[in-house]
Length: 143
Image (cartoon, rainbow, N blue to C red):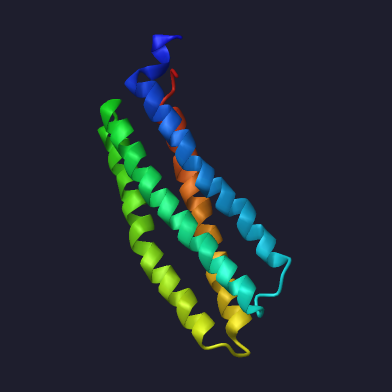
């Protein structure tokens, strides 16, 4: 086994790649909600579950990635990833509360409001992915 695989920069790169997985999963999984009507309560609950899992995974994996980046000697990027993780943790409660409010009071506006939340989440996720992909070459240019 090659010992260079377990250096702090290599571990930070692996942690960054692992952090990208829930973001990419959310990007693809959220597209499937265009195929089903959001007026269906089950689809709404599934959308809520997707948001819950995605925000939770980004918060936890982001915190671990920030620690790995700190160990690799990239404190500025580690602070940025920690901010991303903290934002995911804080937004999780707010977004889930918004989805719960919409799902508790079903009506004619429910699909439109859920779609707006979905599109907002997709835009936020795309920004997260873009930031993480932009950070990889700046930190791991020689990796």
